[in-house]
Length: 140
Image (tube, rainbow, N blue to C red; front, side, top):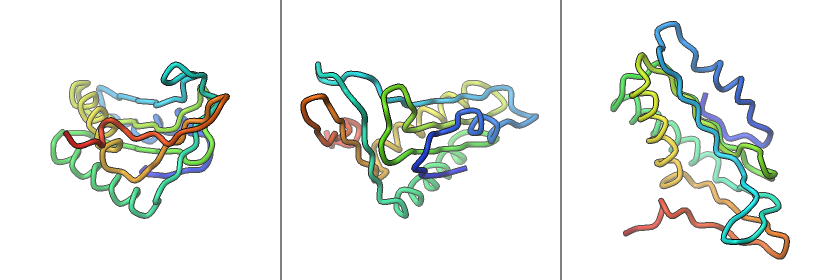
């Protein structure tokens, strides 16, 4: 399951999508909206995406993961629109025979998503808003 959605992410559904009888390890990552950033109170986040390209790149990342690690299944879901505090904006689930592969593949997925996928985040504070650039996407 590779999706861009404009609704709540169902973690149980995501987890169920990667369950496999040969899987000894399942890693589930949820990226949630926290209530603060840069010393300010965050009211909510808002996400926008160039969906066709985002889906293409997410599938590309999935392919890279399958080449690098022996995994069973992988699901990546990113939410767009308004994401209130404590709700998930991104979820990744990976199953593999062993936990090491599941953890490493999941970490790679979120890191590469943040670097390459055209999804933009706006932080809404009590006193204003700002578009956020991912540190991962900056060239060094």
